[in-house]
Image (tube, rainbow, N blue to C red; front, side):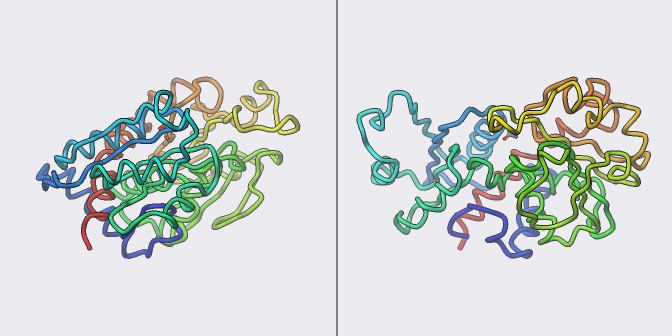
Length: 297
Ligand code: CP
């Protein structure tokens, strides 16, 4: 694997290998060392989980980590991103973890960069968040094993969600039994990669094995796309009552950050069926597997 840009560019075999490698790291806690490779973070959008998770993953693999403080970098003097990357690469940085609000920017950079550079998409606009989808699948497979027998329901603002896009692609690659995307009409996807869309929460959740809640993502909404939060909460928030429509042992997941009382109640977020912190834990092992796959031929 040369770059890690979006799930649809990976073969099912590559995805399976990454998932199994992440589960191996978690089970065995035997970590290889790659001190000759250096990782740099370039986060043009805020992050808690993804940034720290990649950093932890690099530390476990004995890879040095460089934080580029973008407010004080030479981009403020007019340097373009491509030149920033080439400059860091000349100093020995090999892995670039990039988050940006513009769709496709990591792809564009990957097409221009040299052979020794690996670009990792840590989220681009509304387009893709492939490492999140990968860690979500690690968490589901760890718990439920065979995804071809599962019904997975994603609930919330699907239209603006890069996580939902990547989850559709990974569900397609791994042949998930049933994928339902539940959203009010205004937040339904314009493009569908896999699964079906529905606007009835009860119908969508019935017999679900996994429920993935999404944030409303207010910062990405256009003027005409706003919805009254009270009415959203009434019709789509996952609370204990709604959870009872799914299978009794259904997993509740959320990529985070969560907005308690909007898309998920605190009782459910902190309840026995919640896997939210397990997702965060698995994120480190998953990102180790991704970083290693970029090093190995
Ligand atoms: N899930 C996720 O991308 O979280 P952060 O924005 O905190 O990285």
